[in-house]
Length: 443
Ligand code: GAP
Image (cartoon, rainbow, N blue to C red; front, side, top):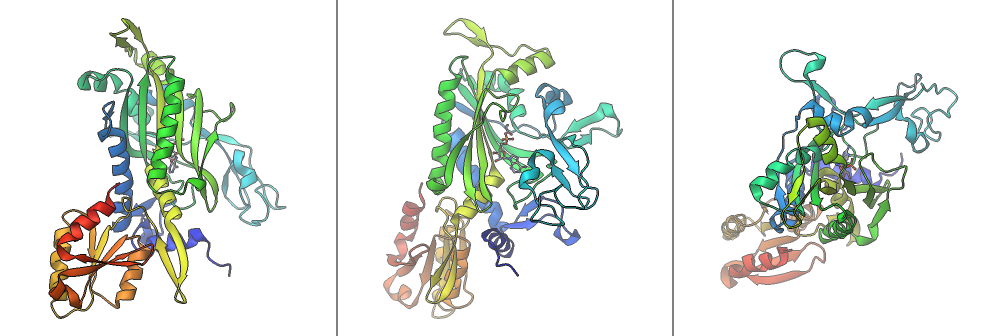
């Protein structure tokens, strides 16, 4: 049997330790839909909170929004999704598998994995047909074409159709932005690689409205800001790069587009896109809705449709990137130590409190310290098993600090703080643990 790959090990760790579970597992699972367990929910929340803090709370020029998933069907005609959000699909009549016609060269024939689909003697591929990736459903009791609505395939459109509402209620002036985090749905033909490409996922998108002619300058600015954000979360800069979309790759709405790519075990892949969308979106919504969407620029005494620079990242994909980047195995005293070396701000548990033994007043002191610390940070209490094993359990889920209450604690009022990465230990006064952690968890 082939040795497990890094992805195999990570998927297994995620299940075992409660990061990610397959959706509806007891029914055999649902294709490429995943659920987040206790630690995964904390991890993904940290990703979203850091994005929201950086994009909305820390800036004067960006407002937050939480638009509905269901929108008027005309929105998706205006956006181009009804006509153009399609992938070419081919079926194999022999093995009943589906492939993207434009990705046959990077796909494997399920019957003979050394060959691409169509190359094995028994393959029988159909002609490509265009397949729309939007999920359809019906609004109201009657299932007829007039009541079709779509699950949004991106959050961006909720921002465009609300841009004047936000502008007027917030009293912003161009240039300004609107940010939102929310679910999106795509009926992907070839999802996969765990939570990398799924059919239900969350996006973190920001649309920045600028004066026509200033779009290229803002596009460069936003590229730099977004790349810096990923590095501030602790991603290895050597595993990040830019991919510029060539003319043929550019989406129908884009004047220019760059992807931030990460080097996953399965190759370089996009984790966030920065797009110069020009005036495409507002022009289309103005035309399809019949409502004027122009901005009146008081300073210049002129009206125009703002141009839009978009930053669009996936919360799930970025969570996977952080998991992959943090995962390492190392040999310590003849044993394999598995570590998720998360940046402390990303780690789902910040500190674990561990009484060395369950006697001599240690559990009581430890519980009191734990109850104090948990008011400020996500903490964990563990009094089960040998201390070495408890440290390893915390290393495996990426907890940066373990605080051990030992025999000296009652008499000397101090504890041991053990660092995940170096495994070095500091002796810290009991009353100073909160300050010690606060200093090290900031950032
Ligand atoms: N509004 C522009 C837009 O949606 P996109 O490149 O299609 O652009 C942006 O998607 C980001 O959303 C991607 O970089 C990725 O992080 C995430 N994403 C897209 N499709 C996804 C999927 N099927 N599963 C998980 N994340 C996805």
